[in-house]
Length: 369
Image 1 (cartoon, one colour):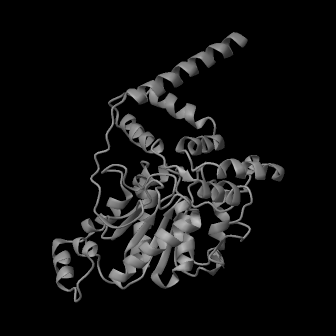
Image 2 (cartoon, one colour):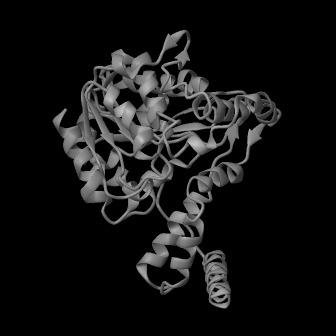
Image 3 (cartoon, helix red, strand yellow):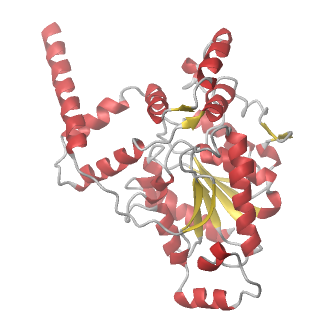
């Protein structure tokens, strides 16, 4: 029995190593064309995915109808007047392009083909402007001004769509900028960090001052450390996915999709020290969101106060934002349409069932609000 176990362990280790080495030896270059940037603040950029949703005639008519000279940026990339624009807000710690991973795996391009005008906020990496930012600063100094910029051109309200912790930022902005926001979409958005899956990671309060000091001493928290924290929630996922990859035909579409997705996973963004304190201490350890203690500029962020039409996607197989982590937020939203895609946190966005289980329901909801 002991010999059989040892043999199985050797085989699994060999398979894992084979998958990892093959991944690193596989050439890959993302060839998706990036849309124009129409606004920038610090390293954050507002990308216009809506140009493809407008016909040439609509664009010509829109330019001709502008009564006052627009700003130079807006004149190069005019936005349609009125309501209907959707602003996508990704997580601060992952690149925005999971929403536009490949030409055939792109939620943003799919929505454009459905006639939905979408913008995406690319946070970029923290630079000199963002170095001292916490989550609240990203909301008040970048997201809020971006919403004001859009509203100033369109003279209409917009829908905010947040993915992962981008949903938390979107929710706060919807409350703070309510006159400019008409609806809210929250995709795999965390809320209760003391759910049963995360309780093992809640440390004794006597250690919090030391952990806070260690984080505060850093300028940024490297993406590799953040990634390792995610793997702690499901330690075996790393082994399983690379062993599966080792068994795939290199020319198989599934193998190529794996490499594209894994390159995104490993293209993370570092956290500023204050964002790390917000997320790892205030949210994860002290559970401030669920305990209704999140404040921005002395205003309490309370989902119960948001009366907007709301679309909520809670993946059934999400290990990053488990069901019981997201559920309290969904229950607190008074006007929520809730769907449960069968995939996981990322598969919901780019998996084989993404179009049927998320993209199309979201497009239908957006057309109906």
